Image (tube, rainbow, N blue to C red):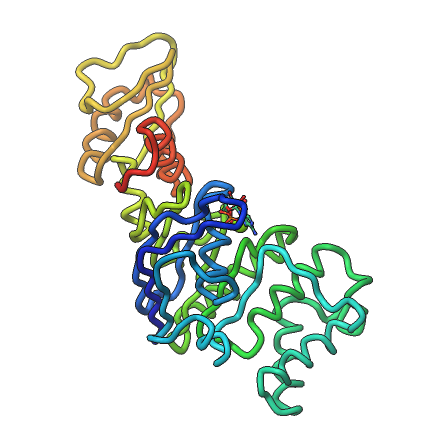
Length: 310
Ligand SMILES: Nc1ncnc2c1ncn2[C@@H]1O[C@H](COP(=O)(O)OP(=O)(O)OP(=O)(O)O)[C@@H](O)[C@H]1O
Ligand SMILES: [Mg+2]
């Protein structure tokens, strides 16, 4: 079981920039938490405070009841930082092997663990290559691999997909899906690809200008859109549909977009459209994405002066 508590966290950097403005939340047994927000909203700052790398200017963090630096010393965290330098003079296998020894594994366990991680992150071909000779994307894979080394209770991944090719990105979501919640672990994932992980995420935290503006399930974020389905109908010619069954729609030329709140309404609409089937030349139904909900929320905040809690 993992519990992370943050209370009224503020971070004011030496430069005077206020990166966090009173962030509070509690995460208990969340397999996968998405941490999202615009550039500069404080995501990396929050991650670095949780893992004890930097301290907050005000407020507290506790990780299973411990302060972050104690939790860090106990090896609770696996971290993929947004930016980092690796020990370039070692080969991939040597680097991971030494990290595993530092974590307290014996030589045999360390060798086994490193082989497993090298397979997972498709590094076999470059296992004996010095890190300095790797391409940028493979360096990112090594950085990612070291975070998973030793199966830590808490994984903090700060934009892990940056620089990964599509094959490795899909593989990473697989690895994350397998890992999330296993043995009670928790993953905090900073990513802009929120829809790619929406089905495996248990919670979404949204930061905006240093404030936590949303804390809920992916479903709750989606419901901010106010509708569950979007139906698009293209009409042949200028045939007008009469007595539309839904008030919530938008028409532009010969295309009508309906915003449907539930399955009952969807069936009603499709029944109605069946009466006009000779006039309908195209029909599509899709679901709003998390990204759309996110953008709608951000637009509301920007329009409404920002910073208020929703
Ligand atoms: N070491 C630092 N010294 C001074 N200011 C900093 C430092 N690190 C971050 N900041 C500032 O704090 C604010 C939040 O930055 P942070 O890196 O936490 O944002 P982020 O949400 O991770 O952004 P991104 O999506 O670009 O990674 C920004 O205004 C940034 O310029
Ligand atoms: Mg960042």
